[in-house]
Image 1 (cartoon, one colour):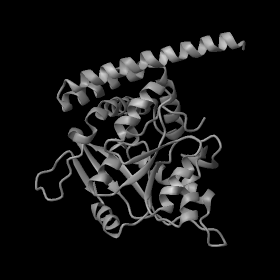
Image 2 (tube, one colour; image 1 turned 60 degrees about the vertical axis):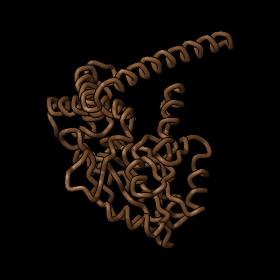
Image 3 (tube, helix red, strand yellow; image 1 turned 180 degrees about the horizontal axis):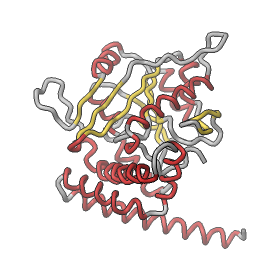
Image 4 (spheres, helix red, strand yellow; image 1 turned 90 degrees about the horizontal axis):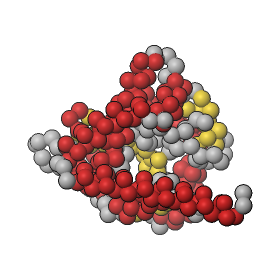
Length: 304
């Protein structure tokens, strides 16, 4: 492609990103004018109505057919509608992220958040344990580092910015306010996380994203490529690995679940087996998704 034509198309792409970003910021601004529960429920309703009409819904249904061939098309379409509710609601919840976490262990009245495994959070905090947390795109996964911070745990999280650079900058600035330190997922990210572990800190990452240069494995019985960074860090720095997830509950509530450390497989030399450990992470995420299929983000290309 000629340089002048290439510059033209890049300008068009930037303009499209800018327009989408401005619309997104406008909608989030309008959401701030509404009471939180009304804004989030409105977003969820719009998701259920508009999501199935989008071109991305084809990918959602294709992914659901791969994962659940035993279900009927009607069942998969119902999951897709609820998944769109989750996705749109998640977008609105960014506006109220810090306010959503109201967990108070001393209160007799249930709030928006309940925590299963709070004793693990407290033990890690009191023992000042350096560890690795992992999660997946389920429920409102953004609440997990907020929850850890509420228990006095500081986590440096691997952050994959959106493709839209304008939204990425705004989102990165917003997440720095209450979610600990962030390492953008790009060249050098592994060194950033390694440095934190080397200094006795803790890190967290999402493990259910496609990674073209990743290790071969399976997810719902189909081939996938998975980033091996987590087991490589666990092997190099000998850190315990804790699964954590967020589950949506009725009436706009959430449950944060922190599980005890998983035992990563080891090879004949006693070292952590990276391919086997990567598959173990896939298996844990698959268990989570099977339990609450409408709470996972199906609109990304995990298999293709």
